[in-house]
Length: 353
Image (cartoon, rainbow, N blue to C red):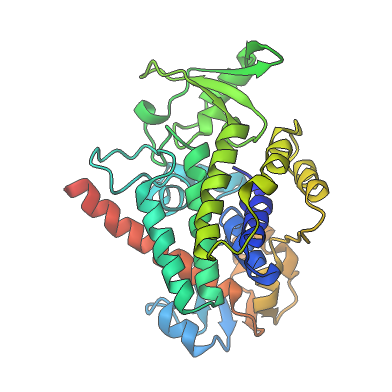
């Protein structure tokens, strides 16, 4: 799934269910930021609050150094996906989480996993006790993981030709099935069998109806992404709606508007997000992937803080920040680390049972 679901749709569901606009924004921002938190190198930050240092800082590093948790990859970072450590620290915990309560011990994703729902319910219980940013951010991270189980179904986050090798892709155009071009299929097959790399963007585009062939299975069931995504949205909404004692709007009051937005055949993600803005003018959407970082960190040297992703390694090491006063960026990394560590321990037990 993309920003149209992870931010826009989650923002709609949270606000319609009864969360305040401010709370809904935190939940939705954290949900989308899972796809945008690509920073992993240690950075220097002066005056980090003690409550962050005690809970998060790596004791092996100096007091003013902070290790952000990388929850996604972009650009050249994808080449590091061949590393097993990346598959288990990034792809599986945040995008391809299997049902770790399943007796099959499969690493392949299945939609609506009971294990992830348990984590969500536990977080909602904590949220009832403490309605704070930490628990809202944790909820947003889990909704990202949970939603991805619909779009990433039948794939796994590890390198496996048995689980992720794609031999053919067909999509519905009008009333006829068409296959992707020969050269597009060749290009996709050159990608590693990790996640849905060999299926390209087909699992993530909300308007597509498509089907995939795999070399090691005869299962070629078609996928209607709009209906799949709508099912995920309804499941999430019912969880929130009942958590807030049914004080929000009824699902049927806006379900058709969501489906209409999903089915709008717009390939570019920014244009697709505009579809949601026009369909839901009552929601004040605003997402800037640098916002939480800017609110948390004050740059203390001459580098352009908006261009930190493109800095060379030697220049990146020279970056110096001080704490600016807002905790959300730190809390996101704290909760992402806790989630990752919990999943890694659970997977280890899961595989050894």
